[in-house]
Length: 82
Ligand SMILES: [Zn+2]
Figure 1 (spheres, rainbow, N blue to C red):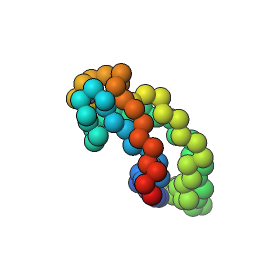
Figure 2: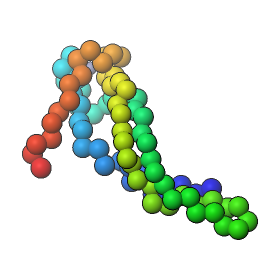
Figure 3: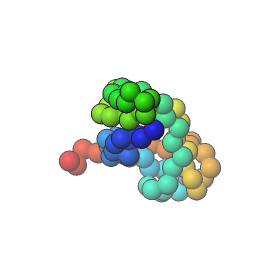
Figure 4: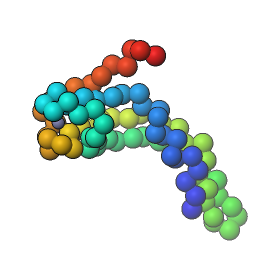
C-alpha cells in the first residue's frame, strides 16, 4: 500500500514549545492523537492507494523535554509573528 502525502502533515501544526526549565526550543517528545480522513483508492486487484489525507482533528496528549526528561517546564509559544 502507498501512503500518499502523509509526510505533509508536518508543517500543518504551527504550535511551538519551549522548556522553561532548560531553555530548549527544538527537541521534544510529543504524544498526539490525529484523526485523518482519507480517500482509499483500491484497484480491482485489491491494491490500495491512500489519497487526499486530511487531518480533521489533532489532540496533543503530552509534551516532554528531551533534555530534562519531563514536561513540567513546557509552555506553548503562540506564533503570532506571522
Ligand atoms: Zn528542558
